[in-house]
Length: 328
Image 1 (cartoon, rainbow, N blue to C red):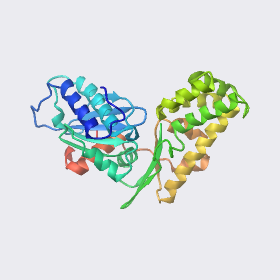
Image 2: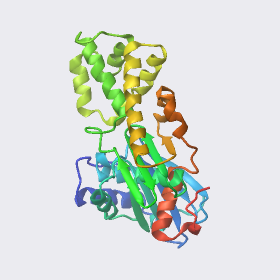
Image 3: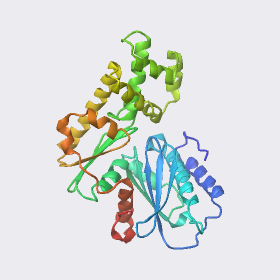
Image 4: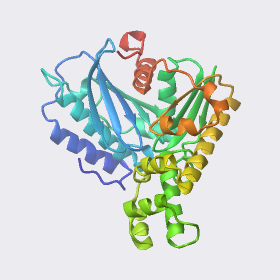
């Protein structure tokens, strides 16, 4: 699906809808039985799952980066792409988009005005609602109860629910936030590799590997950085952990720095009064051994996941899904 990433107004959304109509001409309303679309929209990819009215999973699909910071039209385009893939795996009669009640967990959708703008976009669904990925994941992980949710993936953010109080922490975008994230670690790695190349700081095999991945010269690295997205920086994190395991001094230093930033987010959650924290995201497992032992006891097992949270979100706002909001 071709979308202009720079488009932010109704013209951009209209282009998406026009292309949707061209790609799915056979999907016309033929049945009133609702189907539920739960989507996890992050900085690296978009995952959608379809559920029936009893919360049974029907299908799954995948799209590209769908963080709200990339543009709401871009995010919606990737949601449509993933939805098309999911619908394409179903046997039997095609399910029209007009039967889908959609609930989205979207990274970067923190501001209330931004969420409202997104839900007002013309769309083909029976209903559409959205919240931040942290809000929705917390809803699923704690089955609608109190607790803290920490996400360290391509980006980072945290969310706490304590009684009637809700707290958003971090998640303000790669340029000014995203501490303790994969993009942050990758960005630090590229900066450090350039400093080693220029003999500002000592070199290491890790720095050489990073240069080999993004450019042989500073000019090439600079050119790469002009178009690099957070996901491109986050893609470098396995290299950092690999070399940290080999005790490369630079890699160890950077991983420890990012681990300290994760600990800062944990402390921010604890200040809000949570007693348990669920830690998720692509960086969660590799960074956890680098955290101080004193934080390990706060991590709890999740009762559900972000898709369960999306179903609860749909249920809370439509009163559907057998009142449970729990996927199976």
